[in-house]
Each structure stands twice: as C-alpha cells, then as structure tokens.
Image (cartoon, rainbow over all chains, first blue to last red; front, side, top):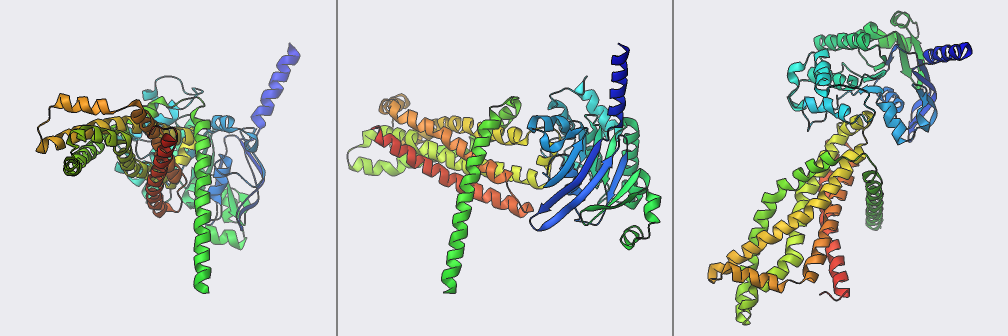
Amino acid sequence: MINATLDMVNESTTIASQPAIEIQHLKKAFGSNVVLRDFSLTVQNGENVVVMGKSGIGKTILIKCIIGLIKPDGGTLHVLEQDISKLDHRKLDELRMRIGFVFQSSALYDSMTVRQNLEFPLRHDRHRRITGNIEDHIREALRNVGLEHAINLMPSELSGGMRKRIGIARALILNPEIVLYDEPTTGLDPITSEEITQLILGLQKKYKTTSIIITHDIDLAREAANRIVFLMDGIAYAQGTYDELIHNTDPEITHFFKR
Amino acid sequence: MAIVRKVKTVFSKSLDDFFYGIAELAQFSVNVFKEGLRPPYEFKEVLNQCYEIGIKSFALVGVTAFILGLVLVMQSRPTMIQFGAGSYLPAMSSISIVREIGPLVTALICAGKVGSGISAELGSMKVTEQIDAMEVSGTNPFKYLVATRILATTLMIPILTIYADFISLIGAFVGSNIKDNINIYFYFNRVFEALHYTDVVPSFIKTFFFGFTIGLVGCTKGYNSKKGTEGVGKAANISVVMAMVGVIIIDMVVTQITSMLGYL
C-alpha cells in the first residue's frame, strides 16, 4: 500500500515536471524554401514563451506544426506528452480540444453570430470537457473579454479589436491547457494593442495556461514573456528574458530590438 | 515552330489540369463516403444545408419551370396541330417534362446557383482560415462542411425536380389554355395516362447523381481554392462549368443506359 502510494507520488512528480511542449530538431520546407531548419524549443507548464523574428521567417508555420495543421518534414514534436506525428485523427482532435489557437485574422465564422461562434467548440466537444449550461459559459467567456453586449452581433459588425477579443474568447472557451497566439496585436492601434496585451495577461493568470505568443510587438513581448525566442534561419537563434535580449550584442538581435 | 511549341505546352497543361481535376474529385468522393458514414453525424447541419440549398431555390426553380412548361406547349402546339396531333399535347409535354426538361433544368439552375454558392462559401472560409479554425477546435471540417453539403444537394435536387415537374406541367396546362379550352382534370388525366414508370424512375434516379455531382464539384473546388480572393472567384466559376458539364454527361449516360435496357 505504501509502495503504491509512493509510486503514485513519484508518477505525479514525473508528470508535473513534463514540459507542455517539447520540440526537437523540427524541419519544414516548402519546395526549395527551407522555413524551419533545425528548430528546438521546450516550453514548461505555465510558461509564456514569445517567439519573435522577421516577417515570413516561419513563426506561424511553427505554431501550425504544434497544433497539427501543418505536418513537419522532420524532427519530433511532443505536446502535452503526446507525439503529434503518431496521433490518428481522433486522438489529434482530442488533443486539439486541450489547445487554444488565436488566429492572426481572428478567423471567426462569418456566417455565424458571436454566440454561435463561441457555441461551436462547446457543441462539438464530444468529451464534454465543459459541463453545465452552455449559455452560462458563453456569457462568462464574453464577460472575460468585456464584450457581453456583442453576443448577437455578426463578425462583420465587429471592429478589429473586438474580433481579436472574440477570437481569444473562442480559443479559451474549452479551458485549454495551452494557448497559441498568432500575432494577437497586429493591425491594432497602440491603445487597443495594450488592452489586448492586458487581456491576454489577465486570462493567463486566471486560467493558468501555458502560452506561445507569436508577435512583432515589443511591448507585448516585454509584458507577457517569461522567455523570448528569436527565430532566424530556421533555428532558435537566441533566447532569454526580455532584458537579456535587449542587452545582447549580436547585431541581428540588436537591430531587431532597437528599431 | 514557336507557336506549335506554345500550343503543345498549353495543351499538355490543360490535359494535366483535367486529369488532376478528375483525381481530385475521385479522392474527394472517397473521403465523403469515408467521413460521412462515420459517426458522429451532423444531422442539424444537413437540415440547415437542405434549407439553404433546397428551400431557398424553390422560387427560382418554380418560376423557370413554369415558363419552360408554358413555352414548350406554345411552341409545339402549331406543329402538332399541323400534323393532326393536337390531342397529344398533354402526353408530349408530360413525357418531355418528366423525362428531360424537369430534371435537367433543375440541375442546371442548381449547378449555377447552389454550386457557385457552395464553392464561394468554402473558398472564402479557406482563405480566411475559418476551415483551419474549425480543425483546431477539434471538429472535422470535411465532415461538417463538405459531407453535409453533398448530402444536402443529393437529397434536395430530386425533391426540387419533382416540384419543378409539377410546376412545369401547370405551365404547360396554362400554355394549352391560351389558345384552347381544356379542362384541368382532363388535361392531368391525359398527362398521367401518358406517363409510364419507365419514364419516371430513371429520370428520378438520375437526379440523385445530378445532386451528388453539383455538391461534389462545388465542395471540391471551394475547399481546395488557393491564391486569396482571386482563387475564390476562379473556384466558383470552374465549379459552375464543371457541374453543368457533369450534369449533361450524366444525363447522356443515363439516356444511353435507359435506351440499352429498352425503356426508350
């Protein structure tokens, strides 16, 4: 009995120490265009990692590989202890329910109202990760992003900032363990960007999620990142805290951070 | 010489595109059966699509079918009277409408209206990452978007055809009554007398194939559209052309088979 209890304790300790995301030697090319050459990254549970780099360098490709939208050419990718490449469709869908993805374009379903957009993941959650009244969850998700009044609006009636907020609300509605943000503040004015940054931070604190944030927004990176990874030439060229990177003397990094 | 080489290149590319298109459609139809038959089933979305595709087409199909029935009788009447076959007008119109005009016109209208609509909708969902959003939320977009639409077109085109046949026969009756005075009971009695099950069954069965083709082509072209909004426009355009050609080819094949079986 004691041994069994000890085994359980050991097992739970091992599980707790497992990283949320572990990427090793990831490779992805489109024809002759090599996007990810040998990218490795480990994200611990509860950590917020910001991935930065020039436009078109492969940041979005990276998070699309993590969620299984794009199949990598090589390397290994473990998410929540599961090897993405070895999952069948059903298992991959189950894993995706545990991950939230905020698209750069928000990608709201434009034939549905805000309510239906938020309802969609809840109705299609076969494992009923969320129990209770669906309407209450939708209201709570909208309250979290300060848009309860927009519940019956169509996406075409929303401003850019509102669309981003609804996109975030939809990504978080199934209480995911990991959230992947693809340029959440791009295209927004500085005030709305700051609001979105504070919203992301507030929600991360509330739901204790692990995050990877793709961004060019230095302010967002400074406020949100436990660690910043600088992606260049298909590898994690440099990584560290915000302060470490802005004091880095490498010309590429200096040039990026001191624009 | 340069012109010959250019023609050769264009011809070879067109041939490649043609075979690629056929392979794409074949793969899509295999996936439709694979995904569509596997639970969970999206009954609610199928009903929604039946409404969008079928019910919303009733007005257009009805008006067109009425006019075609009316015009058919008005144009055939003088010739038939000249040959002393005026009394065969109800029989002629019923066989023409039920065998050919009703199914074909309904399918061609739907290829234009529904096929382009499906293609444009899925194409814009693709380029605005809505299909990706569906996939990352753990929903199979193929099952939810494609299988439901193809099932809806396969079910609704036959229903629309029956409706079009009926409206077209009313149009034909109105057309007959412009010059003659025919009793409606007498007219429809002659209509149903002339119809045999060999007229009705093959033409009804082919409408399922028409519906499947329209849905399949619209979904394939929309789901695989590329290159932003320009690609969406092209996909909608190609899907209309391909669906119409497909419908006419199926019609020809069914007619040939019916003829071989001695039903013509």
